[in-house]
Image (cartoon, rainbow, N blue to C red; front, side, top):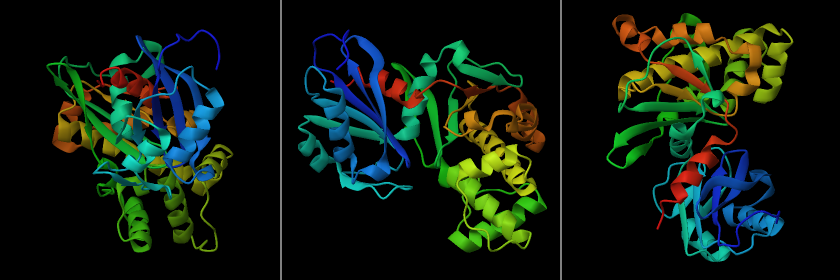
Length: 325
């Protein structure tokens, strides 16, 4: 364990996604994540196995008794089965195996949302115009392996983050080409959710659908990183896939703003957008975000920010874990 930490019992926090689990410690009176480590979920059979490896690696001055963790799946009871990972486990069993008094899981994008009130100005880039209204809901969404959606609602004690499964709402095509892609994805998976278009797995599905539409049916599924790289190098279908991905995300951001009255603003998180670089066209995104017919003026007033902060979910958990008795 590195020096400089108070000799006190830390709390364990973790952000568990479909590809990686990020762990950190939070010490009393210091609401920032320490000893951050990223572990590939594929290397472990469940949460307890990964958490034990993390704790052995950082060797905290005292074994944590409480843990607050975000996970990319609905949290409906003791049994958690991840949507985009083979992990499936009992929370109580993992708690006992880790020797914890309390192990609590919340939806991963609720944790992302909890970080928003604590973001620094330099950790966000404004996309377009609009001014936030005080004490109004704030929409938070973003693509990683899947697509996360949450809403911050003002309450007497600060902010409450709603846990949603908004990424599984149905994708609404805005053009004939998008409708063709959606039809291909629907044929393959039975449902074309927005996550099947605007996420890591979505970028893979969109590119595969475009290849099929162009008669290249022998093309195997490509990871999002390979598609993004090909788009950067000027490969036409890869570039079209990224543009369609960004357009669909913008439409969903507008949907979230309208459905929740997010006049406090919309924040774009997730691990994919920062990797797109110049492929992400903020002006085009804003046009698509506002393209809601009679509701365009309503949306024109709502600001949108792209979040660049490192590990925002851990930052949200670090503040929230301080409030756990």
